[in-house]
Amino acid sequence: YFSLGFSTFEFDVILVFRVDFLISVWFLIVKSFPGPPPHWLFGHVLEFKQDGTDMDKVVKWGQEYSYVFPIWFGPFVSVINIQHPDYAKTILTSSEPKDDLGYRFIEGWIGNGLLVSEGQKWFRHRRLLTPGFHYDVLKPYVKLMSESAETMLDKWESYASTNEPFELFKHMSLMTLDSIMKCAFSCYSNCQTEGGTNAYIKAVYDLSFLINLRLRMFPYHSDLIFHLSPHGFRYRKARQVTLSHTEEVIRKRQEALKEEKELGQIQAKRYLDFLDILLFARDENQQGLSDEDMRAEVDTFMFEGHDTTASGLSFILYCLACNPEHQKICRKEIMEALHDKETMEWEDLSKIPYTTMCIKEALRLYPPVPGIARKTTKTVTFCDGRTVPAGSVVGIGVFGIHRNASVWENPNVFDPLRFLPENIAKRSPHAFVPFSAGPRFVLT
Ligand code: HEM
Image (cartoon, rainbow, N blue to C red; front, side, top):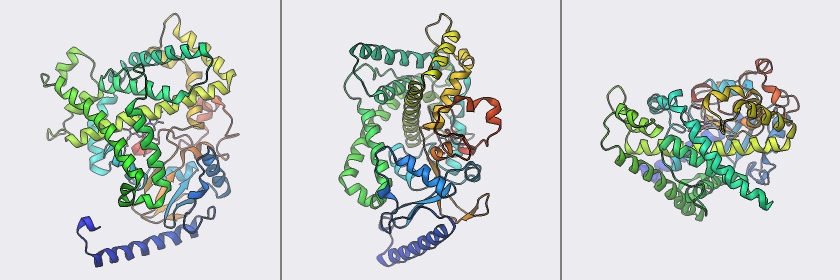
C-alpha cells in the first residue's frame, strides 16, 4: 500500500476495511461450509506434515464434510476445497479468474503468461498462440520425443546391469525438458547426457518447493516478509537461473531469425515450432507480443511443458510397475502396434487403446496438477443452493474429485476399464479433470 502512495491513515482505513471484509467472508464460509476444526492461528497448516499422507488426509476430510469444505491457511485466508464434480462444474464452466494466492506466487516466477493471465490479455494471447497446437505443428514432435525417450532408456539400461535403485523422477524431468526444448524451441541442449545436476531443473525444484512453502506459511503471503527472509533470497536466486535460461533461448532464436521476415520463409527450411509462432504472432492491429510477454510465455511453456509431463510419466510407470497384469497387456499392444519398427509414429497412437486407458487411469490416481483455484467476482451458487460470497477463493481439488468414492467405485484401485467408452458415458464430464475443463482447459 505504501508503494502505491497511501498515507498511514489511508493504510489504516484500508486495513480496517479489509479485516472487516475478511471477517464477514469468514462468518459466511464457517456458517455454510462446515469442515475440520482449524487452529485459531495456523488454521489447518499444521495438519500438513509433508510426509506423503497429506493428500489422503484431504480426501478423508472430503468424505466427512460432503465434498466441499474450507481449508484455512492462517486465521483469515481460506480456500473452499471442492471434491465433487457437481460443485466443480459450477466453477469450471464459469469464467471466474484465477485466485490471487497460489497463482500470484507462481506469477513472480513464470510471469503473466497464459497460465496466470486474465481477461482480454489471456484471450488475445490464447488466440495468438493457438496455431502452435495445430496437428501439423504437433506431428513432427513425435519423432523428437521418441529420440529423447531413447536417450533416457539407454541410460537406464546401464543402471539395470548394476542393480542399484535410482530416483526415476529426475530422469523424467531431464527427458521431458529435453523434449520440450527440442519441440517447442528447437534447442538441442544435451541436458540428458551432460552429467551433473542441471541448473534449470534444480531451480525448478527449488521454486516449486518455495512456492508450496509460501502457500502454507501465511506470514510469507506478504511479499515484504517473504522477500526479506532467507527463503525469499533462495527464491530470487533460483528465479534468476530460470530467467537466464529463458532469455538465452529467446536471444539465440532472435539472432537466428534476423534474415527471415515471414513464417513461410522458415517453413520452407524447417518445421515451425512454438517459438516461431510466438515471435511472429500478430493481432488484427499487427501488434506482436512485448518482450516481457514473450518471456512469460516461454517461461510458462518451458515449465508447464516439462514438469507436468515428467510427473505424469513417472506415475504411469509407477502404476504399471505396481500392476504387472496391466503392464503385460500394454506391452503386447504396443509390440503389435510397432510391428518391426523401433519407435511409435503419430498414426500408431490410435492403435493402443488399452495403454491409453492405463495412462488415463494413472492420471486419475496421480494427477500432475492436483488442484487449481479461482477467486469469485460475484456470489456463486452451487448445485445444493449453498453460496460463496464474492472474493472467496475456491479450489478444485482434482486429486479429491478423482478419489471421490461416491463417483468412483473402489477409488484407490488401479482399474483402466473405468475408461471404456461405455463407462465414461455413465459419469459426469467433470469427474475426470486432469487437464481442467471449461474456458481454461489446457491447450494440449
Ligand atoms: C500431463 C500433462 C499436463 C497436465 C496434467 C496439465 C494440466 C494443466 C491444468 C490442470 C491446467 C489448468 C490450470 C488452471 O486452470 O489453473 C493447465 C493449463 C495450462 N497448461 Fe498444462 N498440463 C499438462 C501439460 C502441458 C504441456 C505439455 C504444456 C505446453 C507445452 C502445457 C501448457 C499449459 C498452458 C499454456 C496452460 C494455460 C492454459 C490457459 O489457461 O489458457 N501443459 N495444464
